[in-house]
Amino acid sequence: GVEAEGVAALTAAALGVSIRMTDATGRGGFRELLVRGGSGYIATYAAGSSAVLTLLAEDRINVGRLHLEGRRAGARIGELVDAALERVERPATVPRTAPPRPSTAPNRALPQRPT
Image (tube, rainbow, N blue to C red; front, side, top):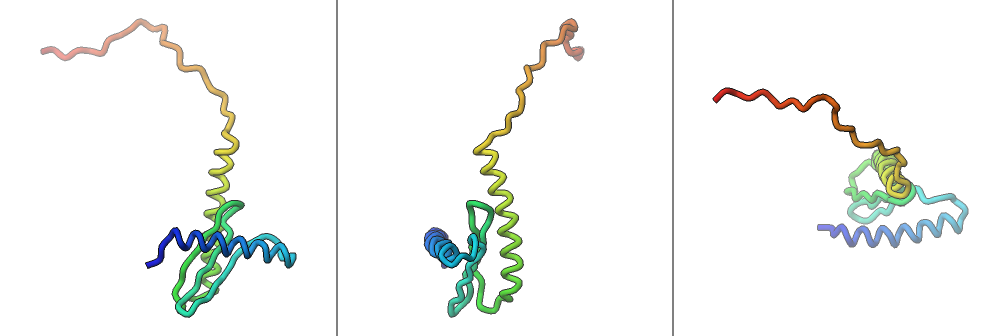
């Protein structure tokens, strides 16, 4: 099996090199990385401003479809992560309302069942 922690660590290392390469060559910000091995692919996609999505695929995968779905999923995950981070960093300033005041109507008890 594949260890998630190991893949995450290697993704971080590959991402660092990828970002440096795009910066050094003037190709803009990181968008995606595709690695092809003898038994399949590892694809990493930007997911918002602070996350990435890494997918493992078998060698018989349709790479065009992998990119289509990976980009789409990365964009959606990015929207969710960025929105969550924005809420944490800038909590909404909702005016607090005072608790409801006790009713001025006479206190009426609930009807009792005869025993």
